Length: 291
Image (cartoon, rainbow, N blue to C red):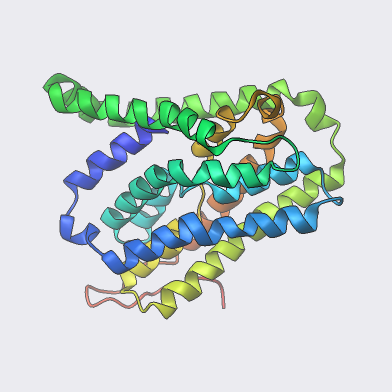
């Protein structure tokens, strides 16, 4: 997570400041990502209790409260010809602020299982995310050779980062293989349905909010895409910062997160190609959803 944020912040510095300087869209995006979309965790836990395995429900709720995705969202904004500078800036800001908001969200999600002290978890997240980020960005500032190495090997480093995330997820799931296989099929199917449904709720909600705010086309695309996606790497970091009793269930907790991540990638990769800007004056050719 920290390495992704470091690259995002660096890219934000390189991109046009005027493109990223969209206060209305930025504030709207922060509110949607950190306060509005996490609210759906409540209904998931309330209506799913007694019908779906609680650990799976908590994993889905956890996915809802993390900030926006670190890389795939920016890639899709680029493909849809949205405001890439704003997407990078929004990603960086929400992931940094999310470190402050997530401990309190986690304490509510797991209140019925294990009590969590938000201040203790905040310290864990600061150590796991912000400390490596500050260290990495400091190295880039003081060493020209490191900056050149990162620039020349950006693609390789990105692949290494994604491979590490996949390995961590694989280890989590492998360690809980017996529990996952022993889960009721209806619970897993319910989780899969929630994964797709939650993303569609985020997407449609973002559509109406961005439209009501009368955002320009490029910013409209950016807000709708970025505010409907959540970050799998951040889910991994958050699970690592949970108390030991909950970390023992990490393999089951991560399953809904993986499902939701796959659902958002599949849905958005299909819809993003529909969004192209007709011309610099800019009306959108594609529509949000098939008519």
